[in-house]
Length: 388
Image 1 (cartoon, helix red, strand yellow):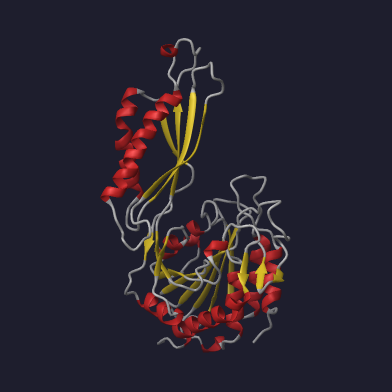
Image 2 (tube, helix red, strand yellow):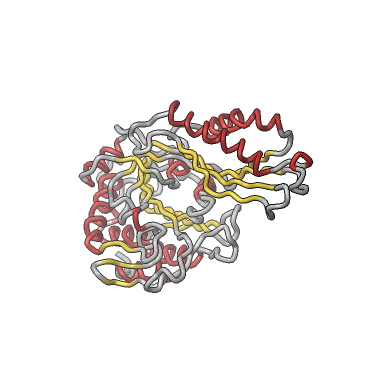
């Protein structure tokens, strides 16, 4: 087999390439260096590598690598994102872009969430005879998962990507996750009419209108609790969170503008359209009282929920290899977009989600060998031991 760097050397190089995705352009960084390193290593292993610049986000790139019999279909897709969140300057006690080994841990930005996953995959491949593949093996590396999921929204640009199974390597301690909620973020903006505070009736106070809007939103929050349930989740109903509010500029002026940022998290199978319809119905009376004053704008494209059936063959295999029953997760992943390829899809990777987006992010060294072994077994069962 062609040579690739040692496991820790690959890990070190991936962490050393900053690949922050952030809606603030001043903090946003291209992921090209990470993609180039992965492309070189995968090519040396005999993969055919395709790199595509995103149409929606220039300077960001997706990579798809394939190996296996040319005419074979199906197979396994191992997927992950190459970007990280920004780091908290002043809160890290070591460099986020240097892989630091200490206290039986590997520290660095992306060690758990989730650039390190690619080093795990490559190391697992080192011990396999890839000439024995009966089904294709795909490696997918995406951009901008931490912001817009722009990379996962452009998988259609890879022709003939039709795996039977997909595993997204987000940090789950190698416990299979088969379902998670979706996510929407909306800005509700009230435009009132300013004036002197000594005559409140001469204007329209946007804060007062927002007070009425929030009353209705809390009613919708309760409706979610009363009307929808998926008992597999710790929080079994869709959620609505009021996350940020601002408005007004002086105590002696009628507030002319007030803005609220909120998120909703639908259950798997619950459409974003239904969420929006329920929101519109709830605010209809306030809209009538203040025509044209209320505007609702999505802050990013919606992310649907997803679920893989509990009896799916991939779920059963992952439970067997991991020794754990598949679980739900409250956070979002790229699973709905990968699942749209028509494959059974789960989330399962090394590291803990508790480390995601944290200063001094780490993965434990004692997780390394067991996780690599599980990935190796997964590839062998689905691509080498599989019926041709």
